[in-house]
Image (cartoon, rainbow, N blue to C red; front, top):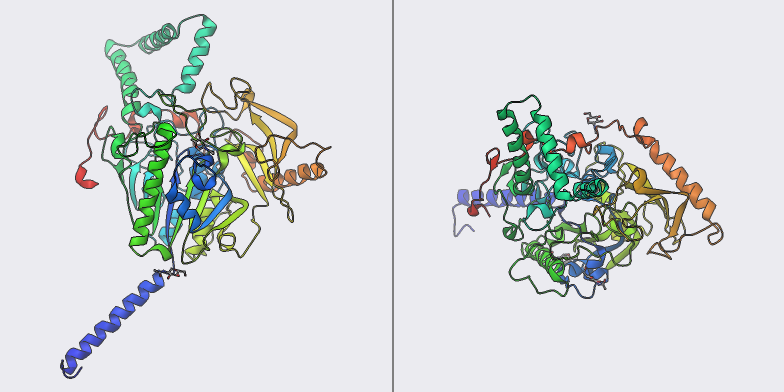
Length: 581
Ligand SMILES: *[C@@H]1O[C@H](CO)[C@@H](O)[C@H](O)[C@H]1NC(C)=O
Ligand SMILES: *[C@@H]1O[C@H](CO)[C@@H](O)[C@H](O)[C@H]1NC(C)=O
Ligand SMILES: *[C@@H]1O[C@H](CO)[C@@H](O)[C@H](O)[C@H]1NC(C)=O
């Protein structure tokens, strides 16, 4: 070295080298905390995925994640519907603990201009990871609320819940978002109106006219023409905003495109932050028709969307690999709940297939609505090709990520468990000896995996009434309800052993199952233990939960002053600056 540089220069070079080494080393330390990429699909059935037994939909990229990682065969969503399932996923606790369980007809947030949503004082794993120095981002669907009291307060927004970066849809896709696709939001209302009109012997259109006339007349009883005009404008603005604003992409708290263009959504992608939740809009209706995928599958538009979604998963995986992040990145793939078997778009294309499992989205505790794919891939750490049959929950992500981020700070009581021992093969049994299944805030069923046994007993206290009866779903309203005359209570409860009867088709009886009495006794005790952890007035299935109920009509209903809007309300509208993508 003395040949080529004078000593002082050499020293400077050495120091630089040490500094570089130190930086490198500190980066190395940081790398001990892995990155997380969590991919969650909307409304996808477990029977739609190749590695879960589908042989006609091509999902090579998802299958690859499973063969390079760990596949969970009994991965359970905490609720059979988007809003409560996602709330439980992010908080690691049953949805009723955060007021996100429904008490009546409304089971998901229906309008962006409502005031319900994930309460600002809730803790998500994203918030915890942020405190551990993680960069956090959410791309895609949110559906956990936006504003509380005024447009722009963003009290429920992802930015309030631990995501420093948000690019996506604050809401969800509904058929109502695209003209000509029919309605999801108003399906229930339409059904009620239809019944009412039948009852009154009136045509539906006549009835709607009469109701509108009455409303206008009432609002006008002592009003001026100006008030009447305002009322009509409000109605029109509601219908306009239902379509225009039900979904649109936004960056952080800014609306960037309104109304949204469905065709541009699938191509949006993101990469690299430490925690990235990639919350796909696929495969909820309305189904995309993207060039390159349209007409390619053997299952119509639904199959095309599945294959497109799989392609996106492949792109994310490729990016992780090509950036050399694979060994330090835990990738996770799941669906928020089971397929929506009653749903169909204007062409009659069905949504979702739950394989051998009974029921689907919004059917309480039936397996088809809650058993979803669960795949973890982390080449540096997890064995390739491991399959876990034990019960696991989407709520397990919270404690798992916390553990991996070395977060040992005190926390609330969680309903999930750290999955690492099961994933790595250090444990063979799940810590979920019991798992509870909620329909809204009502305890619907309990799963019991007795120690030392393969059996998975499931005890249903009530089941949803199908419409028409025996139809295998609630075809009249598209979703089943959890209360009153919409359910049938069972005493003794309906009991199945999912290990021998995964389709829940042969109820056990005292005569066929020697452990019958024990099953009822053990599950009743588990319910008691669980209830003792709930606030007093929640434990008795009471309608007034002590945490504010976010799913009441009062919180759900659309308010013009809460409607996110770019432009001047009610004339919302803007087009995304494409340089942003
Ligand atoms: C694969 O998925 C399609 C579409 O959801 C479904 O119709 C078909 O029955 C599935 N195949 C199997 C073997 O589950
Ligand atoms: C990733 O980890 C695996 C298993 O420990 C190892 O064989 C492989 O070389 C690692 N790859 C990189 C790029 O470090
Ligand atoms: C959040 O605030 C509400 C009151 O607004 C309270 O009832 C609830 O217990 C709080 N939740 C947490 C987790 O602190």
